[in-house]
Image 1: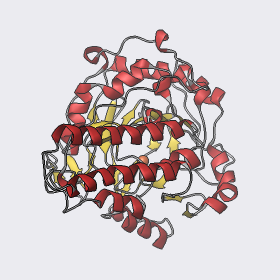
Image 2: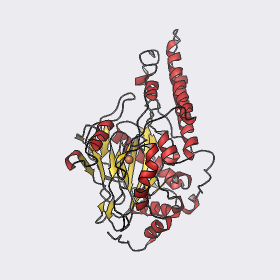
Image 3: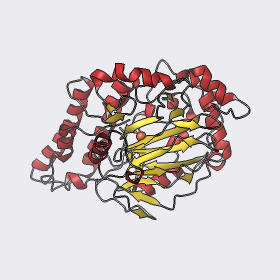
Length: 414
Ligand SMILES: [Fe+2]
């Protein structure tokens, strides 16, 4: 998942600045949104299997140990992320790995995955993944929305965070498989990219004993543009000194990162006792006036995910509703209508942009560097030039399922 805001969206975020004196400058506004409720119905291709799973219980399924070290966007290390005022961005890059799940929590999540192998898909960027588990599992919804988890993540971010407004982004799961023996190139678990959602919590669900490869690496450059520039200039031969490799520790551990702000990838798995399984939960600032860094195009076009149409429309409607609620409950009396006009225009502008994106009248950039094709993502040429390489690492639903269900760990031949 990757992307940057288009210019017009940045303009929307700045609308009303300096005018809104009666209510406070828009840049300083803070009003926390609640978590968006699930839609009324389940998308057609999903089936609710919640009845087959236990009730989520933090006392049983979590074993949270708070991270003691954070790396900030300038790559300095701190014990605590500075708190953010107004709707400024968080300065967190990523936390050190910390324990999240109990052994029982890992077991239940793996069972949920095993029950949903019919949802395995491939994209040009990610060879094997599952999305949409929020629509099949109440346990997944409860884990993503757990107040104990949100408290820890909010502390790490430096402001309050909530689950991302696309339920499809709950528990996105990647499977890192070995290339087949006849493959010439090994394909990364995920290519160089920035995320299309502000924050991700990456949870390791597989046995990482003696694993070679499957590492999360970040480009050590401040800013997305600088990161991609380095990859292009070096023709994807970035030296070790220009990258940071982040340890996941082991099964049941996680790390929290502001993946929308740093270029990162996951290297190919070369040796492992079982497929590398990471569950990725997405989060966003609770403040409804923070810029929306969601890149709709990533889900609709790259992921071919029709469910994102309604979910994006609802998410933006929820933001507008919360912004209007802030206005209706907080705006003071004024003889000057201009602050009200500026504020309401801002809400209208974001909704207008939403309409334009849904109607394909506006566009958003997203960036990733395809390491097989050896080039930045390009819609016109990506499909053919990358197909062979991506096919190389795809695994059938049956193959992944059999590996996951094996009583003994399966050694994948290198
Ligand atoms: Fe990512």
